[in-house]
Length: 112
Image 1 (cartoon, rainbow, N blue to C red):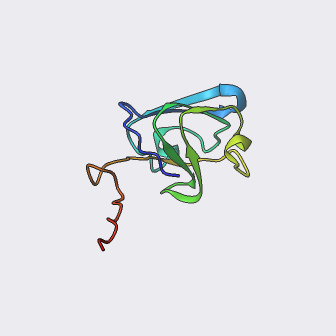
Image 2 (cartoon, helix red, strand yellow):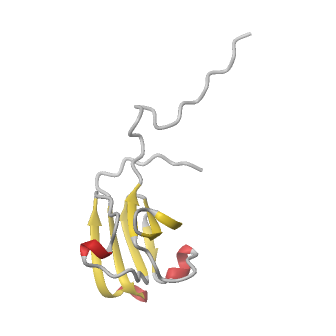
């Protein structure tokens, strides 16, 4: 189900090891087409999402398997159903950006 969010600030923290250990990368607001280009390895073992909704991609350029991250803590990569601890690009979900009512318009019922 789609749930529009009006988060004031989108934020996600990536850790290269499980249980929020190891190197950390914090991202706010921006999409990241390549974690490597930002100085972070491709190994992501755990994730914290204080707010917002994000999609993580297996490969750079938003390619490969996609993983949806909503607000919450993900202590181990198997919690987002990944086959391996690999995320190489990230995109923020921007709800309600096209239309005041959201990205989808509900058709009106036909009148009799």
